Length: 468
Image (cartoon, rainbow, N blue to C red):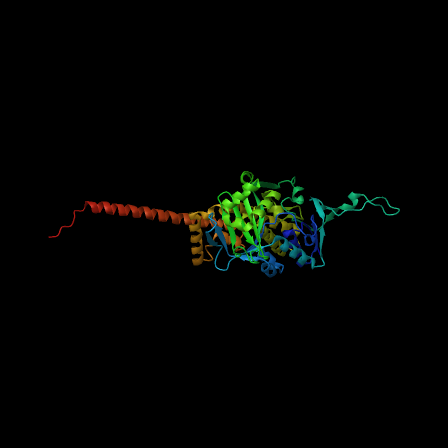
């Protein structure tokens, strides 16, 4: 059977291992970190994940959907908290029953690694750093990070570190799932006709936690809690252990100006998120901001996603995005499913399958990157605008009447597998219809006003009716 080399044992790498294990391929996964299942604390981003239809479909293909969904907390709506800390509004995500699932990143990763390892043809190599890739040879260079004893055995010379820790590995297929700062992608930067762009947005984030209250959820658990405040926002997602992961997103300038010391950050939270402030607690807020610096957010695009005859980029290595549409993981999981379907079409032709993957996936990846950037504006501000609320109600009303014809933007992204690029095309068509409808309404209103005014003027010219 063919051998697939996977760089990275994160979410997308581990899921890919499950897909190829099902095919019976020999699978080798090289991961920079230690085995997270043995670690007390895993460094890195832990923003809770929102599992939606695209991710569920990929998990279903490897038999993990039901288990994973049951490990999460369903969310049926946004709960928008007003600044007074007492009132809020509810905005359902879709039709009754449609929901996303708040899931713990680490647990999901651990489950998929364990699932893949059940197959004897899968091998994970932790503490192995992928350094680069050779397109011509179709190989990667990997360095073992495990400590090597330099004490010579009797009658032997001390081992040469470079000989014992670094090796070149070849496979029939190499898939880079090694994240936004991918070593594989970095080594391809000089490859002819490889287009690449990245952007650090002017906003960062800090994570906090709300603990259970009397051993129960301190907030309503089956909603996405949102505190939109114009140019910054706070969100909270429930966890299975009855805690909430809370994240504040704000411009770095805002962090520096209003959250750089304990007094300022406490005043900032008390003023802007009074209800969340009470649940978080002043000590937790103060301690978190004294230890943690705001983390950056990157948006990354590249094209193509394949190189040579056997190298492919997936997940954040190909399309890292800001987290505001909850599609980073879902898009990465769908990458695995899309390529699996393409391999079914070309089972004996890896080069052709890679070209086809780039052809169908690059445009969609670029599209969801742009949508994720747009959705931040929605989360931090637009959800409070009357025009936004009216459009959402209008979309839901038409969706009830024509469920197959008129699907709201959020529903297309979150509750379907309509290609992202097609989602945007459909939305443009909807916007044209709405624009024409608005023109008709405006024209009718103007005509009505003119008619009423004309009739009133006419009545003023008619002499009063006199009785005989």
